[in-house]
Amino acid sequence: MKNTYKLIRITAAVSKFITADYTAKFVKAVLIKANKYMEEVFESEKYPSPKPILITPLIKENPVYPKVIIRNFGMSEKPKTPPKPIEIYGEYDFFIGMKSDIVEPEVMKAVTSLMGGVKVTYGNFEVTVKLKGFEEIERKVEKARSYVVKFVTPAVFRDPFEKIADLKTEKIRRFIPFPPFIFSVNIYELFRATYKRDVIRLAYSLIESHNNLNTVTKVWYYYDKEWLPGVIGYAKFFLRKRLSKVTVDKIIEILNHANVMGVGTGRAAGFGFVEIKSKT
Image (cartoon, rainbow, N blue to C red; front, side, top):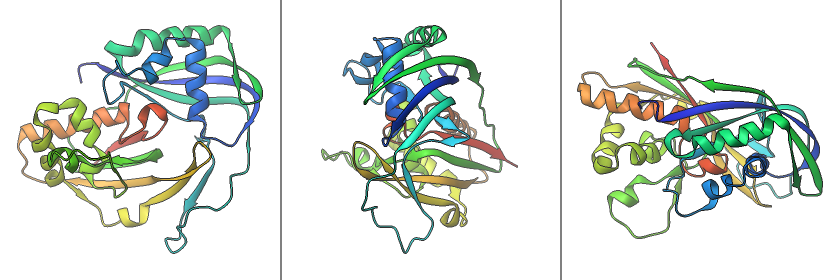
């Protein structure tokens, strides 16, 4: 990707507040408070679609947000009651993935502001956030027998076949962890001119493990006073043998892009953050 994309991890001390909403909304509010121009990055239509930024919820070992994980597929109905509020206090991590030639200067201005601490009004709370750590994360996969994709935050996939069929319909979300669904946004960002061919190429080249039926599951997350479904867990895919070098190189580039910029829709709202590892 020629260093065009970067992933950073921020560690911040957060004063006490209580929320029942998806905590990536808080991360977004903090970045905008730290650098007002970040509001344009997140909201302005002048920025290309998909947005050139990914954020995550607050993380303390695991992402922190109201959730109901479905482990028994016979009991998958939407939760009927609002979640219990979550108390936030102490040190948390969050990640920012970015197309560096577009948004890195503004992200770094926000990080600089966080060094001195910022105060943000969030709900009924005045919250102080101060930078405690900053690290650029290097993630890279190479050609391997297989790859494991861990869905760290809820993922919701974009349907590539609407675009292929040239349908002028609403943008439908998909939930089955099928490679063209998972990586359709990454293909579009990297290989827009050959999008249709590369969606089909990816569908042919990555073969799902049968264990994915056991390792991928559904999560209900609470966002704007509504329970919504997403995909978490992990999935393993095998690289088909005897592929051309062009095909393999493209697949590796797609996987490395996803490792930084996430997958699916809503990445600028805190969804689709993944960790992809090679397996021999």
